[in-house]
Length: 249
Ligand code: 13P
Image (cartoon, rainbow, N blue to C red):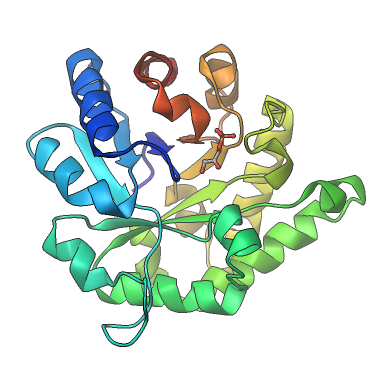
């Protein structure tokens, strides 16, 4: 069901002590909100985070997972390992995974399929690079990322999917897509899903915006009708900033 979501992707930041400190500050300051609040610490701290947040309103997500059940995949983590520490949500397809770790649309489709087969929730990320926007190719790029990553899924699977549109040029650069650019793309995403499936799936899926969201711009971005929340990087590492973004929704 479409809901408001603020998710913090901590990327490769925060050791265990820092993770505990940030979580306890978040728990202390978390406002009452109807939005779902999610944090995604690094693998090694997921179990601690899941324990600390067990009876709280903050959910824990992993930043990645492998598609195989188990086996000879050095350095990788399976769905079963995540579920066994009470983590049932996973970010798949982040542009940093695509760019630095060679994750292709085909691989991502397999990961999504594996996560869903294990009854997990998926936050699926996609978005164009600067050159692609400059050349006016951004709609095509986003359409093909969606198609290749998700459009092989049966209709029922979509209730377990959250989308995160993250234009690569806006990630960690301080340059945010304007609220109008975000709205334009989010509306395009719903149109694309309507064409591939139907209006009810398109209207029910939550679409988050990610890329330099901060306390000063969150409210304006979140005010757009097709923006259901944010996937936050840098600002999620500072409790007061993340809390301010949650308040903005
Ligand atoms: P920043 O908010 O640091 O730009 O990162 C966004 C992001 O990549 C979240 O997944």
